[in-house]
Image (cartoon, rainbow, N blue to C red; front, top):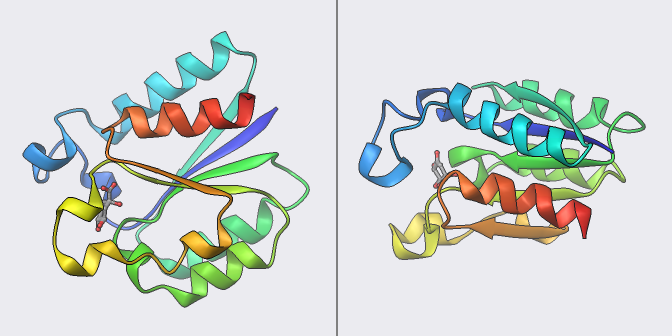
Length: 140
Ligand code: DQA
């Protein structure tokens, strides 16, 4: 099994920004943890982070035929990017939406995701473990 872990805008700042919300682990450390977890289960994982909407759309389009699933934390794009939503809808690769924070317990604008309707599922609120749980969902 081949999984792409895709992180969007500002996720490169994880561990340095709003530590009370997103924790102290850097994205690199989180990715290392995911990679170790995946290796134990015989899953291949690739990682990509980008702050640009179009780059994320291209990554999603390119995943067709290459990956069995995508774990996507689109960051703030989650709440308004119809472009990313359309990119997800354009491929048959299942996408699991992930958020580290419990977006429903935060500002009003975070409660809406334009991506959820075209994702196969959503996991949120478990910090970096949200990624691990998303990975686990592909193994069930
Ligand atoms: C986030 C939640 C988003 O609302 C926010 O814009 C982020 C991170 C999360 O992982 O909790 O950048 O996706």
